[in-house]
Image 1 (cartoon, rainbow, N blue to C red):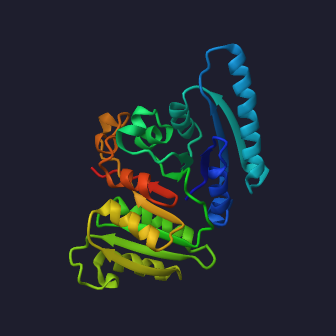
Image 2: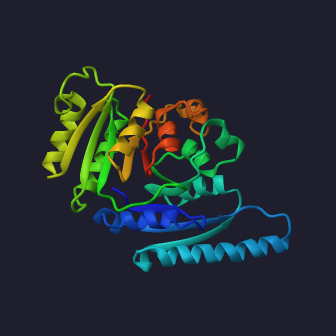
Image 3: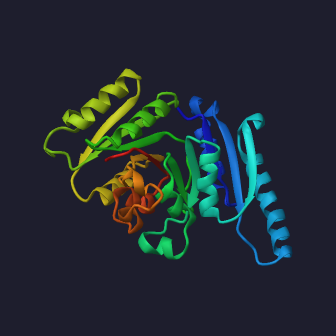
Length: 277
C-alpha cells in the first residue's frame, strides 16, 4: 500500500508529470505527497539567497502543476547536499515511494559526476520510481513487470497487480527472461503461469512473454518493442545488515540488472525493494 510519496523536483517537470499519471490510480489518489526541492550549498550569502528564491519558485510551480488535492501536499524547501537530503527526507517522512528524475548515467560516470539519483538508488530502502530526462512520460496503459523465480520479484508483481487492476483499459505484460525451458509456451512457464493466474483473479488483461539472452538488454528491448509506459522491476538489497549504509558494489559499478535497466530502459522504471539474503 502506497500511503506516502516523496517527489523530488528539480524544475524539469518530469516528476510532476509522472505523479499526475500515477494519480489515475485510486490507491495513489489516497496518498499524501511530500514535494521536495533541495538547494545545494553555496559559497556566498547572496548566492544562498538567490538560490533559495529560485528554489521556492521551482517548488511552487511544481506543486501548482500537480493534479493533487492541495490538503494532501506538503512542500519542502531544504538546503544541503541533495543526495543525502533526499534519503534523509524519505526516512523522516516515512514514505512508501520515492519519485525522482535521473540523467540515466551509467556505471562510474554517475559516480564521478556526483549523480543524485544514483546515490539514492544505492542507499534507499524503499521503492523508487526513476524518470530519465529524455523519457516521454505517457498515460499508464501498458505496464510491464519483469519476473524471475527469486523472492525479489514478488513485491514488483504485487505492486503491479494493485495498480493495474484499477487502471482503465490498462494491459499488464508479464516477462521472464531466460526461463528453464525457452520452448515452453510463455503461459506455461511456471513463473509466468502463477503470475498470470493472479492477474486473472483481479480481472486484469495480461499477456506473457519469454525471451533468451542477457537479462538487462532483453528487458530493455521488450519495453521498446511493446511500447511500455512503466516498467516495474525488483531490485533486491543484497548487502548484509552491517553494511546497509554502504553502496552495493555490483550496483555501484553498474553490473546489476536493476542498474542496467535504470540506465537504458526507454520508459520510467519503478524499482521495488526486498531483502535477498
